[in-house]
Amino acid sequence: MKNQFKLFLSVAGLIGTVAACQSPAENIKLTETESAEATLSEFAAKAALGEHLVTIAGCHDCHTPRKMGPMGPELDMDRALSGHPSQQPIPDLDRKDLESKGVAATQGLTAWIGPWGVSFASNITSDATGIGNWTEEQFFTALRDGKSKGIKSNRQMLPPMPYEMFRHMTDEEIKAVFAYLKSTRPIDNVVPEPMPPLSASAQ
Image 1 (cartoon, rainbow, N blue to C red):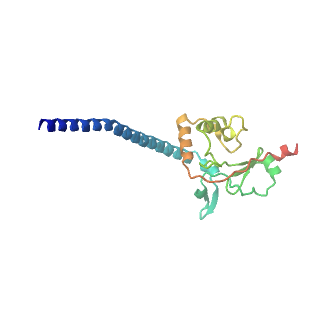
Image 2 (image 1 turned 90 degrees about the vertical axis):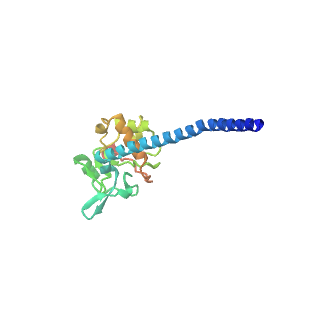
Image 3 (image 1 turned 120 degrees about the vertical axis):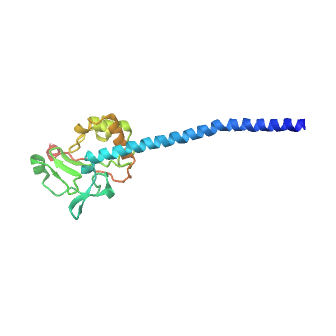
């Protein structure tokens, strides 16, 4: 009987030891899950703020093509933030006259003609043809320094991109906008390169 009791105590101790060994692992697993959920929740909140900022800052005004609706031109949200459609030519206008006298835009308001030549609204969706491969640092360089594609050695962004105003956004706001744009539906659209003014081409 004594031996059976000793065996019982040994088995009970072994079970307790195994249970004690398993608990930290389970706790770590639970902690990792909670951490992942907290990170996801934090990103969702940041992206939600970014979506709000993109909406009120007028990013759709240039980066989302328009289509004709029952009440006139309306945003084509099927192509939201995808920039100037790659296959859409600019209107057949007297560019020389426009460049010297004023500014004109395409019917979708994604291409603009002025003294700087012709500029096209960029694709800022999460696709590789948009900002899918951008780093957060590039995004800061684009909005703060107005550099094309967020590369310091690149040309300045062209009108009507108001980076002079956007550079006053806080770091948190820029990070939120970037988080949202990275979460958008990717749209494959290679936007044309800007055209120099005709006066420059003639030189």
